[in-house]
Length: 150
Image 1 (cartoon, rainbow, N blue to C red):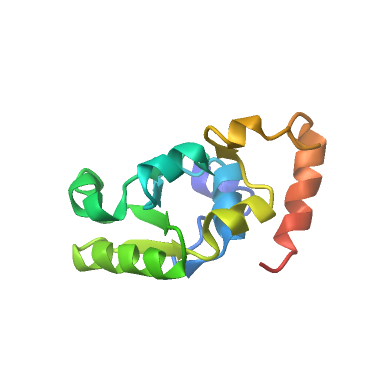
Image 2 (cartoon, one colour; image 1 turned 135 degrees about the vertical axis):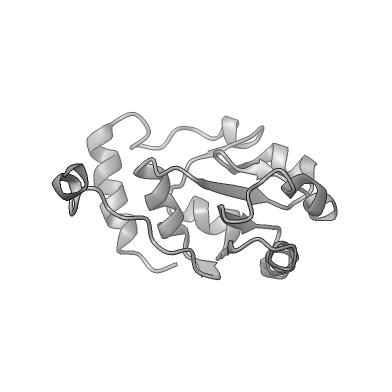
């Protein structure tokens, strides 16, 4: 009965594609959807300077060992320094048996372009945006960014 009550109100999570747009990830974060992991495969120093909020640092050369704690069926969004590094990391995880690995198109620059939340040393020095403290502005910004092409 509860499932029928909320059907159509709570969106179902989108299927994890081989490559995902940053809008899909942002939407999942804004709805508070559980059961996915964001992995940043850049060097730890670069990760510490700035990354997608909530991302885990798993540098490419240690990816196999570090990812072993994740469930093989977990939704994983992965990004690196560039598209080639992202593709290499995604292929590594898929070869290791991870089923739902999605390369985040455009990585951190695309994420920042749509106003996705970030954290890190350099990111903490960046002034807050107009919608950071106002829920109505955040909703308006979300609707506008859903309509943009990256």
